[in-house]
Image 1 (cartoon, rainbow, N blue to C red):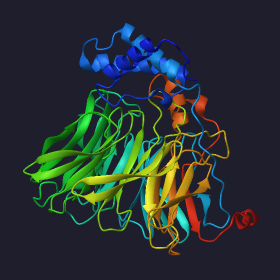
Image 2: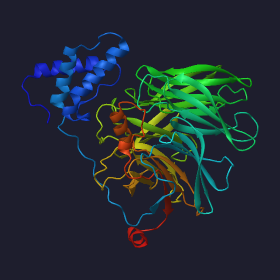
Image 3: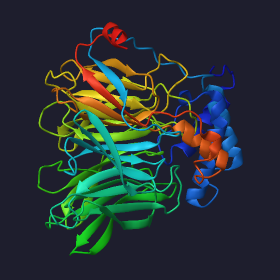
Image 4: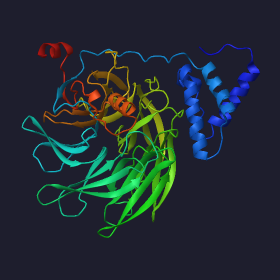
Length: 500
C-alpha cells in the first residue's frame, strides 16, 4: 500500500531527488510500475548502470537509498491483474497441430515465410537457437518437411536476397551472438550463398560488433546494388544502427546511422515518397522510443522521434510496418512485453498498440489491447471481411493459470476497433509468428515458433554462462517447437471438442 505519512517535507524532498536523478536519461518511472519489494534491487541496478556509463559516481549510495525508500513506500504491494477473456463460441477457431520434431528446450527465434524456389509448396526459413541452425520448413501435398541449411549461432532474423547476382536466392541472417544483453562484440551478419547444386555456402559479412537483432538488404544509396541495414541491440554502452554500403563486387564500407543500445529492428520504408529508402526502428532498454531515419541523400539521415513510451519500463518487444487502416500509407504495429531486466513478473501495462500514419512524419498512438508478455504481432485479414486483424503472441505470462492465453487474435470489427479472441494457452511461449494460407482454402493460417525463455534462463543461471546449454539436468519431456494453427472459419468449441 502507498505510505501514509505526515512527513510531507521528506516526501517532497524524495520526489525531487527521484526526478533529479532518474529523469536524466529517461522519463521518471512512477512507483506503481513494480511491487514495492522489487524497487530497492531495481534502484541499485540503475545506480550501477548510470555510474558505469557516466564513468563517475553520478548516484551515490546515500542518494540511491533515498530513491529506493521513496519507491518502496509509494509502490503497491502487488500489481493489479488483467481480466480474463472468455472465448466466444461463435467466432472462428484455430486448430493446433505439431508439425516438426519436438525438443527438450525449444528455442525457435524466427519463422519467416519465403519463396526460395527450392521446394514445391509453401516454404519458411526457421531460426533455431537450440540447434544453432537455420532450417528450411516446407509444406507440400499435406506433409511437412524440415531440412537444415546451415549452422548459425543464434539466428534471430532472416531475409532473402540475390547477393551474388547469379539469379538464385541467397539468405542473410542476423546472428545475435548471445542471448542476454551485454557489451560483448559477438554479433554477426551471416550470408548463406546458394551454389549451382542448391547448397548454401556460409560467409560472414560483418563481425566484432554488439548483439545483432535485425538485418535488411536494400539499396540505401540508390546506386543500383544491395546495401545491408543492421540493427545492433548490444547492451549497456554498445549498440546502434548501421548500414553496410556495397562498393563494387566485394568491397564494403560501414556507416553509422545511430548510436545507442536497444535497437530491436531496422525496417525499410519510403515514408515521404521521395524515392529514397528511410527506416523506422524501435529502441528498447531504458529509451523505449520509435525513431524514423529519413534519408536525405549522400549518406545523410535525419532522426525523428515518432513515439515514446510513457515510462522506461514499458518493455518494447517488436515492431511491424503495415497499412493497418487501409489508407495507402504505412502504419506501425508494436508490442511491449519485456520484463526480464528488473522484475520478471508479467505486467498489466504489457500489450499491443499501433501508430497511425497521419503524414508529414506525424503518428497518432492507438491502444489495441493489454496482453501479458506481448512478444510479437502480425497483421492479416483472418476472417476475410476486408480489413486487417491482428495475431499476438506472449513470452511472459502466468503460465500456471490455464485461463491465461499465450496466443490471441484481435478481430477488426471496422474502423480499427478491435475485439479480442483467444487462440491457445498451450504450448506456452509461442513467440515468432507468420500468417499464410498454408492449406489453400483462402483463409490465413498461423505458424508459430516456441521459444522457452524460462528454460533458457534456468540453464544460463545453472551453468553461470550461455555455454553448455545442453546440460543433461534439463533434459526432461520433449516439448513442441513449431505449431501450425489451421484457420477453420465457423468452427465452434463444441465441434472442436467432438473432433478431438
